[in-house]
Length: 147
Image 1 (cartoon, one colour):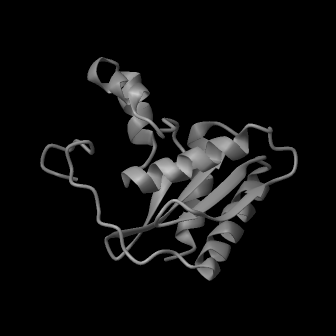
Image 2 (tube, helix red, strand yellow):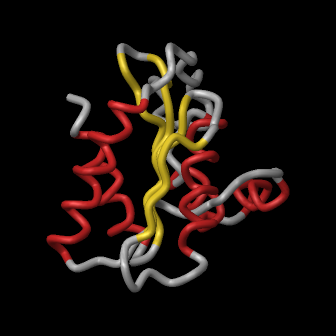
Image 3 (tube, helix red, strand yellow):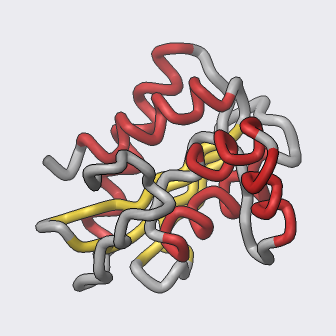
């Protein structure tokens, strides 16, 4: 965070070497295990540093729309190099934050994160299917598999 603690004003992290399939598999396994332990039906999408999908899984009984939403969250996080909650919070605040509604390619719902390694964005993860805060928990469990 910068001195002003405004993620919109902070310089985004640079892109780095992309996630590889083996890393995505570890992340997916950790995210799926977490969701299954909580009995949360979710879709999980992991992208590379360009937003291309490396893995996408839809757990049993997940609502149909969740896969598209998870893809949107993962791509938003990697393309803008910020957690998707930033957009959700900006819209919730109103005023100038409402400008996010006009930005093409933004899924302004919590549950998407850039995957960061050595201070560089190397991919993205997005989760959808339960409350957005719970989606975020699943995504964070996936990211923890890389540390």
